[in-house]
Image (tube, rainbow, N blue to C red):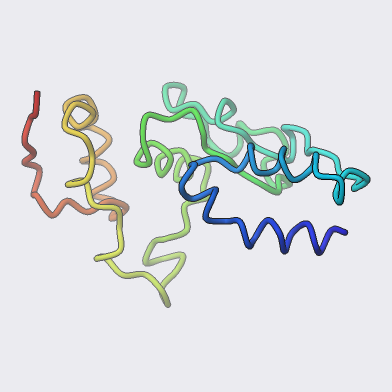
Length: 150
């Protein structure tokens, strides 16, 4: 049943991509008659690091996490946008798309481009942007300029 469940989940991955969340799909499938007798347990926050445990304002580092070397999953929710997610991953040493950690697949052109970040967020995040451009985690094809839209 587990293999069929995961095969079904994979075949419906487009729903996750368009809906931006997998929770509804999990809940729907687990309530289906075919999967009702599956036994599963959720991981505790010692092993499943959630967004509330990695706080940008408090500059949470990996050593501040419960079981810093034993967690299985990190979910960096509770962010303003995807650039904050990158900062959370970086702060806890789980950002892997760098020249150092992923030399075989690293390509500067594939880095997240700040030109895509909303201007009203960019107004408030200049320090973050400068730091991560210097570290080579972001690129900025607009060279720091962005249009303010009303």
